[in-house]
Length: 463
Image 1: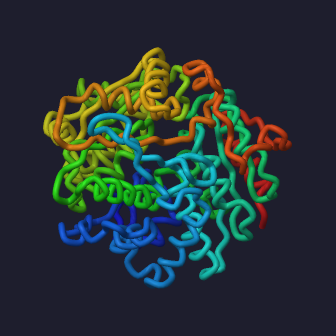
Image 2 (image 1 turned 45 degrees about the horizontal axis):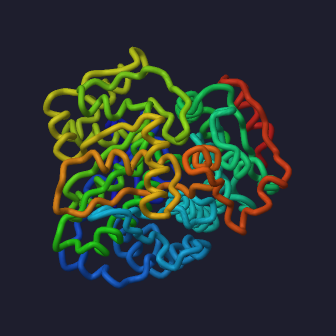
């Protein structure tokens, strides 16, 4: 299995190389050269398997010879051993033909754990084998950072630096990043928004002298292994609802487009996905792009669903690569327009391609709060504001016989203020985090300045 860059000018890599590299040297994102398919019989055979067994079958073709079957099975087993639900990603029905896919049963209570726990084990196995040491730098709008720290804390051959926008994540999200005591993890509160964090991260990857000197590696959803891990739960959910014998729809609350792109890969593999619905909050650049044909940044407005407060959706580049017939030069041109002009027009052919697979919608702040309240009143289930955005947008979709699955991306206790405002009840943290507010915090405020960030990372990383 080989991986190519969305901009067409970087070396073709193996799975392990692409995983450890993260962002391609031409600034693009790695994708499989070809997407393997699963015939209907193989999809049907996933029914009744454990999550780990299904994960092995879905992901194995993408890994190539990076790991033996036994090694890969053991890696998957370790990745999900810390989840607190036997099904790992259970379904809960909230209405006629409408289900929630609960993705918050991992150690940091968010869907990012499915990918990050796996990628942590993959990195550990690869680095132990090679004796290599890496510096992981990540940018987060809330959940990626805590999931990355949880996955890599205490590992002897990894330093982890996480950039998060100061004052723009929930208190629980912040404390999950700032309270781990291991000396190989560092939480950096950047003065700016998530797009600033993500931009500085990409600047580091494109500063090759620094990148090579510190052994820079990335675990944001720019990393293909992150997307791959998320493909699995589309299969397990769909098979539970009758696939491959009937199609399924998915609504995905998304800001950076990685989670919903994983659904696209599942569809390409042969899963009968009738439609993938992009759910956005008031920072609705993806909805505007799909409906209007222009991807134009307008600045980020802070919201009660902060993990979606994004204007530059990195993984949308992967979708554009497919929409433009895998023309790397065309994608590179549009990414340059985004950087220099703040946006670009999507060609009619590419827009038609995107609309065949994706639909979209948005939820305002008031609609998000109303949806949390209404869902609790109708079902007794408490949902986080990001999940509420998905539930609202899913309800707005045209009727279909295909079941709708909305991805429940985080535990409501991660956003207690928003949930309490909607329901009148403050969701408690699970027992494993009951003392989170009592733990001491370690955080470094940093300016939105590349040179200052690189100097800090160089100073604190272990040699």
